Image (tube, rainbow, N blue to C red; front, side, top):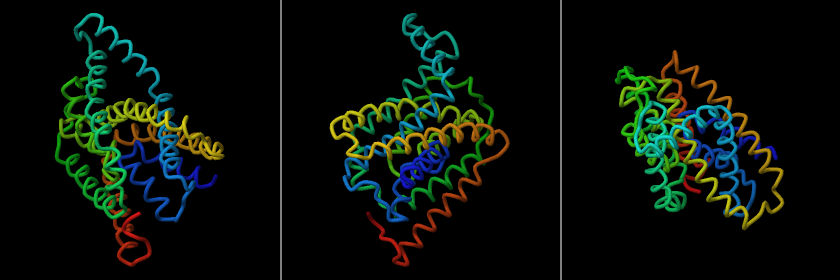
Length: 277
């Protein structure tokens, strides 16, 4: 139960902070030698339960926005044209979701089986953490959230597809892409968080089918508390980050990513932990 709650908090905190939730969900059990369940398939399903928790936190936070964009998208479809900024952003979400969905369908199992090793996660944490900070410092912030349209959505969606590799960070890479096209930090983060919602929801539905086949196997309470912990922490992190980024840059996140990467590589180099799982 303790492990489930800690992993739920880990997921909720790192899903929207630009530090890689998938990487942390591998590194935390690797670091402490944890294994909530011995069934690998059920472990993957537990990951989905945690992601669905953060999805709930995001939906609660952005509920009014999501409803407004859904209505705008349906209105645009009926009219067969884009007439307002809400409709533009709604189409940006739809189009931006497509690259990640295709990449997930084609490569997710390969990435899970071959590219989720601690040493590689450490490298990805360090490299993309530096890229995030450098891009943020070099690029202007002369575009607001209201300027986001389908083309920007597609660009962010292509970037989001890279986040299937653990250690890259979905929010980190989409925020980096948003800063590349000169969106201000708060707008970049808001767009990143909203773009994550359809992907998380889609993955949750697909893995939910697996859960229906396997059942909880006696781990229902662990699933529940992991879900609750990730939902609460995910909501709090979204609220915090959107305020934090109004006045601060991404330096603290780069430092954190470099520190975690250094710790992982040190543990591997000294033989305390294995480089692979």
